[in-house]
Image (cartoon, rainbow, N blue to C red; front, side, top):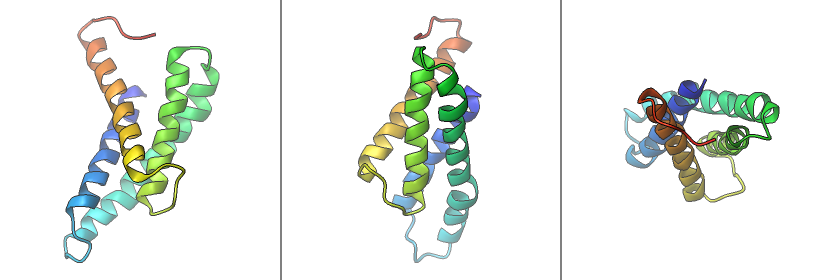
Length: 120
C-alpha cells in the first residue's frame, strides 16, 4: 500500500504543478482539470482516509502509524485544496506537507528495495 500512497502523492504534486502551469482559458486545460478532478482528487482523498482510519489508527504507537496519520491529513488537505475548498493552511504549506510526505515514502521505498535499513 505504500507504493499506492506514494504514487497518489506524486500525482497530487503533478496536479499542483499543472494548476500553476496551465492557463484555465486554454483549450488543453480541460484535460488537466479532468486529470485532477477525476483521478487525483479521489485518489488523494481515498488513500488519505485509508492512511488515517485504517493503518494510522491501528498502528498509532509506531513511527509508521503516526507518519500515516500525518501524511493522510496532508493528502486530505491537498485533495480539498485542489478542488478549490479552503483548508486550514495556506496552499504553499499544503504543497510542502505533501512534498515532505512523498519524500518520506519514496526514500523509504528506495531504501527497502536496496536492502538498506529504514526509519522505525
